Image 1 (cartoon, rainbow, N blue to C red):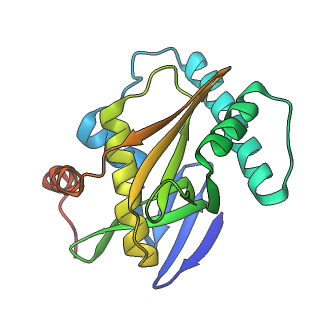
Image 2 (tube, one colour; image 1 turned 180 degrees about the vertical axis):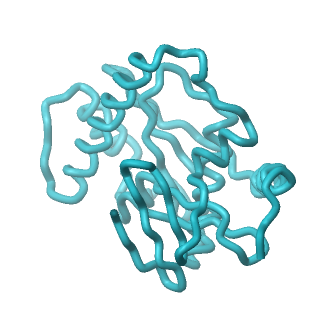
Length: 201
């Protein structure tokens, strides 16, 4: 069990059950919220294939985190892709693996963790970047996910996020993808979720 104090929140995370608790109340994850409003994207895919894909995605995230926190490099082609993107866009990673709490009407409804907060001389202000290893990006899910992280980060840490990006890395392919900042869309998706799951005050 991971327990983190985030300003007025005490966030507990059970990695086995992938369950978040905020101030002793269970809340859904960002992924679960997205699944509720947009549907599950891989429900017809073989579980074995999903497991292998998840393991490769975790390995890539671990390589990146070890580099950013300990300076460890690896010979992986995907790690080289990450370093190439960092160099091309002069990305400086300011924060890693940030947990956020998302509120609606002053009540925590979800929690999640994203990859990094960054800055670059090519961009104004700070941005959120998430790393994806999927074959194809699901643009609507990606937009909602990163906008939820933006909302949660700003609510939790009281710091402004100006832009959203995705590092799409797979084998020898790598790309730095713009994600639209869309607070109205995000609010509408939260309201859609709350219609099915009203807040219990």
